[in-house]
Amino acid sequence: MERALSIGGNLYLLDDIEKDLKEGKLQGHVEGDTWAITQVHDWPQRRVVNILYVVGSMDDAIALEAKIGEWAESVGASMLTAVGRDGWWDCRTPGWEKVGTLYSKEL
Image (cartoon, rainbow, N blue to C red; front, side, top):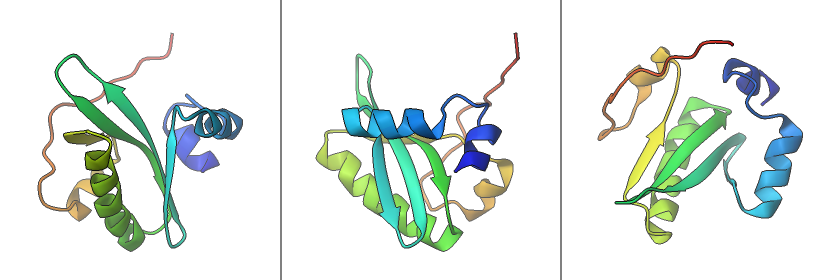
């Protein structure tokens, strides 16, 4: 997880994730040895679940995506979003589409 946090721009420390999980601001999902962290976003027109981090195996991640999708629907979400490395695109499940490119700049 530390590596994923670093690659993601050091937006969170592991302690931050633990705190936000306890407070319900983030959600944790597990399949085998794979862990995903999600966050619910309520926008004016819809509720969206963003998959923030996934660490573990690709096979478990694909199985976990289905579970996250079911859970997201159960909390009223109508969309999943995620940011990932380019290599993940080749392993995606049906239904995902690219909707843009995330840019970042250190200040």
